[in-house]
Length: 257
Image: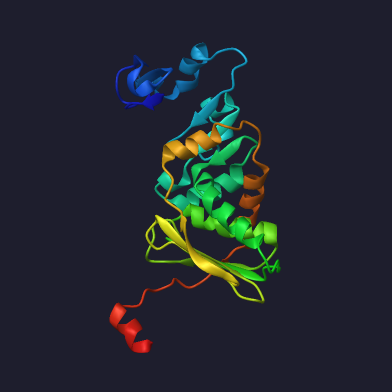
């Protein structure tokens, strides 16, 4: 763990080694760099790396615009960022598009694994029709919502509308349009979703927002390039931005019905 201290401070390197406890079956080395050393994280890390061992860099926040060109990123086989933790998540996601190199990934993408699995499974059921259009809604600052819309646009080659929804956080719903009826997943509370599709009973599906530790564990299982994530980044330019959705007050909705 490399933590940058104040650059105006006197040059100093504080180091700590943690064994057992919250470190688990491993050792955690914490380096705190101050003054002119604040930008020397890579030089401090190199002596601690094992020869031929895979190296993964993770920026919990404040990731560089181009992780592969960062001194620590250049040492790594895999570079993990988290656009959702940035001050401007959507801008950070655009930076990922412009700077992508094999080995890059983002936890905003990893959080979509359950959504993608549910939608793919629903499309594998009768009546096996093609999807003609899709709509994905979520919080305005949700990079995962953008990535889900881009994934559908890229791989289904259909128009996909991305809507801002006040409910949030994260993804609220995904609707796939087919001639016989829509496939819909709606998750209003960030925990449990409702899957609706023609010819099948409505059913509740587990869509709990994933913890960072679970996303990291998934990413650490692979060190090769993620071609699907790369293609999805290209699909961001294909999504259509719609007008924000509004939630009706209960009394108004009851009056309309």
